[in-house]
Length: 566
Image 1 (cartoon, rainbow, N blue to C red):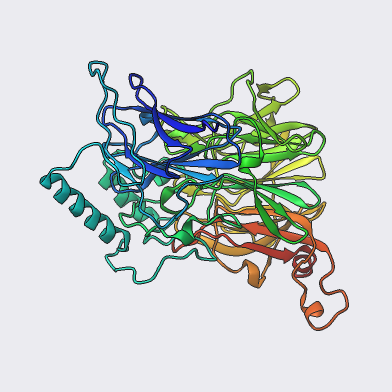
Image 2 (image 1 turned 60 degrees about the vertical axis):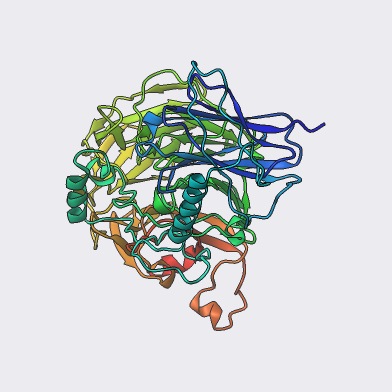
């Protein structure tokens, strides 16, 4: 007998309420009691062929506050009000089951909206269990209640088809190739916009992105939302548009994408993907891994250690929650573990993390002080030793770089780390520092040639033993679209141009890998026999532009072609 079920607990004094069961609906939405300050969601019973349960907490305007996912390996989620700055009265919880033999798999049917009675220990009766989408109810509604329900339904239908600017959406919303972020908002607000937003928020944290020196998630919130359609509910075949994610290679033909944030400040429901570079195909990977997966986040780092074949995920932030945890994904057993590390390291986001001789070198980043508001940028270097599970701070000499976040760090020839750019609001940097890993000494690098303008949240990638690339970024007002290559032998900058790198982009990921179908060069397009051969390519994913779009396409550029531009 299949006794699978999904249950929720609202507040510390509430008993579990069953939301989904074997014979019930595959999707349920219900109101969180106003007095509840915690929500715990968990599954019970065998999962069988079921893949996952998606969970969304939405505010009174149906705008997502936070999201989560139950899987056969991660069977419990919890949220607390203090972690989510937009959690006020009128919050709803929506749970959706994917996979298995769904009784009602018609995604076009409306969600069940159930208002739960507030539960206190004085009440002898528990809050009513959610009804299923079969239209049954335990009592008849009064005429006034029926009228209220009809009015609410009409309002919901109108809101579903209205854009933030008031225009009515006449066509069914579809997923854009570039991304999913229009929504009438700008991803990167100007300093003037930030100041206006700060005044309007009156210190309430709405302008946390700019004023608090954290990336500008968005300084406005859209009220409209797209209508839900069967097309949108279909499984994705590639990652949704996002920015602030990480992407790292784990072998010659595989890369892993983790985390990120998409439209309307919503953390991505598809946080983990595998990329096969042989045919540039994607595979959703979150439900494949066992163990506790990292909580949704942005501004974290993920680096791969080829010796231990493990990915190390550190830090990041989620609304007003900041992380200093270390999660490890073993790519052989495909299992997550969370490290109980010794030593001290502050919660950090938008830092850099470099691997050297099996240790993680974490530099800079934004930290919250006093908690949970961000109060400044770090100039400190922290090292994590995975063998001893301990954090420590080394003695570093030489030129001290200024505090910053959103910078880049490239390890060159296993001897030096080159740090470029970043910002500490309101100042953006375009300086270069080099850390000698043998002497543990910082030095300012005097460069020649046309240097990139000041920027943060740019993309960077190592092209060869002596060259690395800087692309795009954010200068405090706009996303950028230029590309530069730095030569460590001559300490010189060279600006290069390429049609695939001409679109403004910030908060994106860039890696270099061998691919099975690199973009041919101009000579190859003219009929050279070498067209289509395997080669080393620059792979770029995600990021946002100046119009509020989040990119979901994968861009490939031949490394050889870029180097020929120098």
